[in-house]
Amino acid sequence: MPDLIGGAIERGEFWDSHLKAIIERYADPTRTAIDAGTFIGFHTVFLARHFGAVYSFEPQPRCFRLLNANVELNGCGNVHTYNVPLYDTETWMELANSELQQIPLKMRDGAVDYNTIGNAAALAFVPVGGSPAAVRSATIDSLGLRDVGFIKVDTQGCDLRVLKGARQTIEACRPAIVFEVEEKLSRNHGDTVADYRKFFADLDYDLTEVAHSGSDQWDFLAVPRGSRGE
Image (tube, rainbow, N blue to C red; front, top):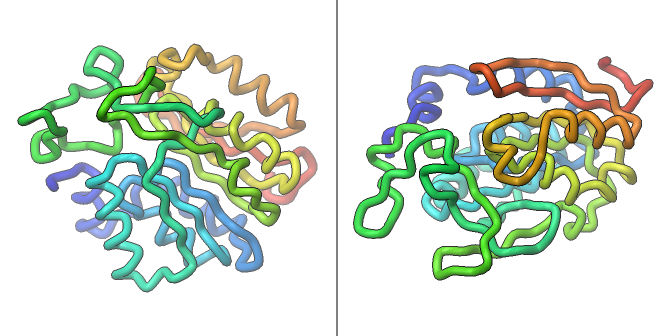
């Protein structure tokens, strides 16, 4: 599967290089990390070396198979993988049509043509009423975890919904969180940048911008006020 991220990894690059120091800063082998929107598992494998357990979520079946292969090849016995999207409720979701995507959704014989997309990690999911292609979403809170030290969310516009579905976990565990805001894709879910800021202000978290790509895409680090590493 030709891919932008896979090509970077083959060249020995750390994808989203700003995340490396952040993950290392909050590493804790006694706690759990969550990787929401893991794609083929690069960050999952890195997290597995720094946390006691990793829960990794990737809704695209082909990418999920590559995730599991990479987990196996790297001997990550502490990783739990799930082929489901995360959201703030349990609902039916599927890949958005091309009009709602950041990149064109190229299809062949009724299936995603991964050989011509180039960056399948950029494909977005949206809620639907139910269709043959739909999959059932889950919430982070449904895992019932009480030792979460780190959450990474990169879900192409769903990030706030994923975080809302983790609110109980965040309140109980007070983890460090890295997430992405993609302004255009967030509109698919009725969310704005101000909504993200309010969510974290209500949780008594501070936000720091750690990366900015293009005109409407930002990565943020969220930490509880008064915590280490601000």
